[in-house]
Length: 228
Image (cartoon, rainbow, N blue to C red):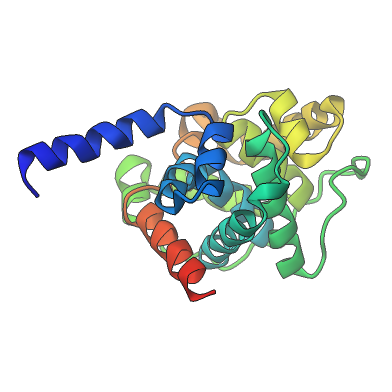
C-alpha cells in the first residue's frame, strides 16, 4: 500500500472512530458493512467481561461475544437511538450467555440471604499477559471472581472490572441502582476476604481482551455474516 493510500485509509478510519454509536449504526444500515468493525472493537472487552461473568469459561465467552455481534448486526434496524446502544448490545450478550447456561438468572430479584459462594472450579493456567502484569495474585483474583454467585459476578464485572457507573450497570442488568450498590459491596467483601489488599488496582487488569483476541472476534463475526 503506497504512503498516500495508507494515509487516506487511516484518515477515514480515524474520522469514523469519532462517530457516535448511532452514527455508526446509520452508516452500517446504509451499506457500509466494514465499519461494523469499529463498533465491535469499541465494545469487545465489555461484552467479553460481561459474558465471562455468566458463562464462566473463556472460550464460551468468546463464542457468546461473536454470536451477540451477529445477532445485533441482523437486528440493527430495531435499535432505537440515538443513545443507549451499549446497553442494547449488552442485553443481547446477557440473553445469549444466559441461554447457554440453561439457567438464566433473574437479575432483578432481591439479594439472597448469606454469603455462600460457588464451588471452586478447576483453574487453568493463567494467560501469559496476565502472568506478566499480576502473577499469582492476579490469578487468585480471577479465581475468586469466578467463585462469586452469578448475580454478584455480573455486577462486579461491570462495576469493579469494567469501571462502569452504578447507573450504567443498573441499566445493563435491568436492576435498581440500590441493588447494584448492595451486590457490588457484597462482592467486594467476599473478594477482600481472600485478597486483603490490591483489589482495586488489580481488578482493572483482569480478563484482558485485546490484540489477537479482539482480532479473532472481529474476523469471526464477518465470516459468519458473509455465510448468511
